[in-house]
Image (cartoon, rainbow, N blue to C red; front, side):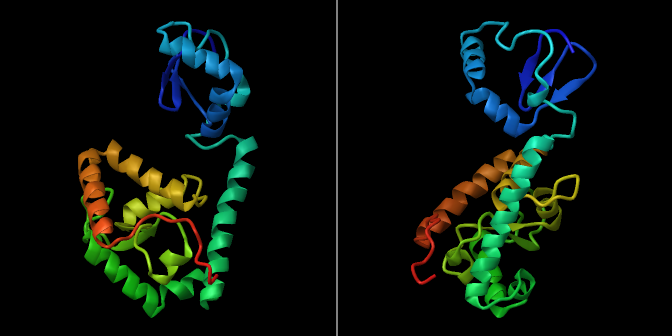
Amino acid sequence: MTGKTEPVLLTFNTNLDRSVVLCPACLSEYKRSPEGRRARKMKKDGDDAAWGKGEWPYEIYHRGAGRVCPRHALQTGRKVRSKYEERLTLLLKLGYATYKSYLKSDVWSEIRERCFTAFGTTCHFCDAAATQVHHSAYTIETLRGDSLVHLYPVCQKCHSLGEFEASGEKCSPKVATLRMRRHGCENGCGKQIRHRERERKLVLSQLNDFPSNRLDAKY
């Protein structure tokens, strides 16, 4: 691969009829490296040669539909599993053996209805009817129903697109939320999403409900 490269989001389009899809984790590492910092400064100063010429190191690109490279896939998988292991630990403390048993409980039914009442029955990330509730994080407050700050009404399509990679691998709650937002913006719903986010902040402030990653002292 040769020639000048133009960075566009996570894809470097070359003068050839192909593109190099970057691993986001590798790109982040590259940007933090001395070479990456120099390249960003050159680009900021308007230097056309900011990203250099010739072949990119293999470590900072791969051809894999936007998935992370093999080196980071293992690390990412461990982090995702850790998030859901933490969820199970919290559920066990609340008396639920599995997440499925929690979703069948009266507690979750009440939380779900409160979410729809507070934020409406339209999907937060598109204009379809919301039939599910998405968790952007699993905290003890959220699972007990003390807080709605990490809950979003969503449709089944957005929920599936956000939570699962093309390979079928499950994403972390935070990444799933970002994926659904990006998908909505790419499909022309950016204005509606920003409007709903403003309304959401207003509702949460009226409920005196604010983000918190601190676990209740009782647990």
